[in-house]
Length: 102
Image (cartoon, rainbow, N blue to C red; front, side, top):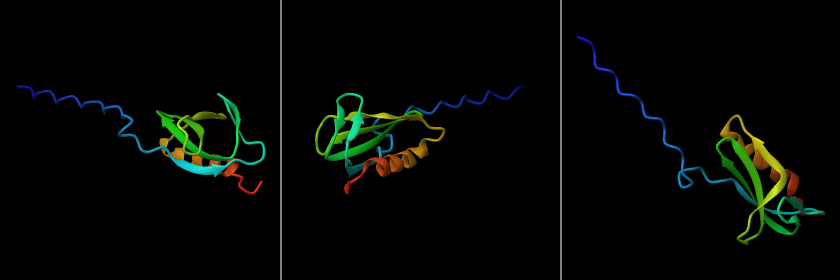
């Protein structure tokens, strides 16, 4: 008599937007020259920066503070080996783009 086959382990369900950790978001003030975006060119002034993770891809987006539209920061896309690195990417982006004293 043979032992019954062990049940196959179910693959983990993909994360939905509701289950994904929140994207790191920080209010910034653009420095002289503003922040270049793919969609509308340069944005300036009081902005909100968000680093969105989808799978292993991170994209940094920006919006005018309290606006509805988000724009992709030009050149701010990368593939991460570890999704936990999204926080480090966000910290670097904030450090580069937040220039309230310029």
